Amino acid sequence: MAIQPFSTAALKRLRIDPADVPQHVAVVMDGNGRWAQKRNLPRTEGHLRGEEALFECVEGALELGISWLTVFGFSTENWNRPKSEVQFLINFNRETIRKRRDELHERNVRIEFIGREDWRMPKRLLRDMDEARELTKNNGAMTFTVAFNYGGRAELVDAFKAMSADHLTPKQITEKKITHYLYGKNIPDPDLIIRTSGEQRLSNFLLWQSAYSEFLFLDTLWPDFTRSTLYEAVAEYQIRSRRFGAL
Ligand code: IPE
Ligand code: MG
Image (cartoon, rainbow, N blue to C red; front, side, top):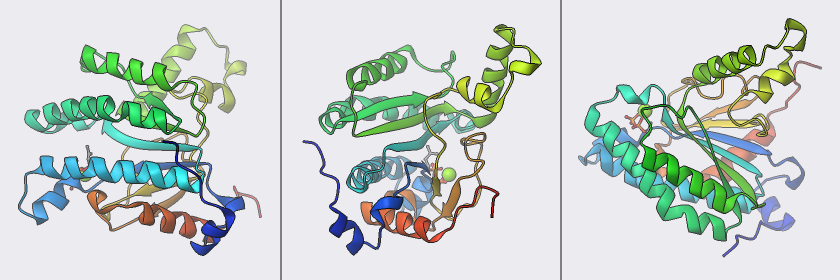
């Protein structure tokens, strides 16, 4: 079932200006492990609860009329975690894609992925990613992008390598051109980047794209994130005044 976006009146009740809803929200979902630790549960339980929070966030974004939602699923640095956790996260992400694909499709959501498709990515996972992308490619309610095996520096390295392979001359190298060589070339820059769990850093997420993003750091641990947290984040975003370096 498609999710109806909120009416103007409903948005106003949430103190959200319908004319200033961020077009693109990106999220660093952090704190799953600590959420579990606090409850004497295995870290994996935190990831499982984090998946529910993620789909709360997706539905909240659809209600608010956000057009692009990007989340950090697995970073190029996450391979350095203990092997059992890496294994868990890979399987878990694959299961999540398979489990949620049809539901997202029914909600008219287009699924995208950004990241490096290298030898460490299991073939099965790549196949499931392609299928999800293909199934949902014509959907128009929102583009939901999962950054998987993603690192902002790796993305720039890959872009520069591709530009070099295409023999671009110095004159041809512009900001616009570099953007064209990034993984998600048609994804607009994020207006708002949210990170949960009290950590205040970017951790190699969307380095190029975040040049003028508003940052919101929340103490909430990711599994406790609900659609109301997203509404509040957007209300907070609207209080900020964005000048893009001008006056
Ligand atoms: C975020 O939670 C999930 C991923 C990075 C995959 P963490 O696993 O980083 O949880 P903490 O930071 O240890 O609490
Ligand atoms: Mg963490």
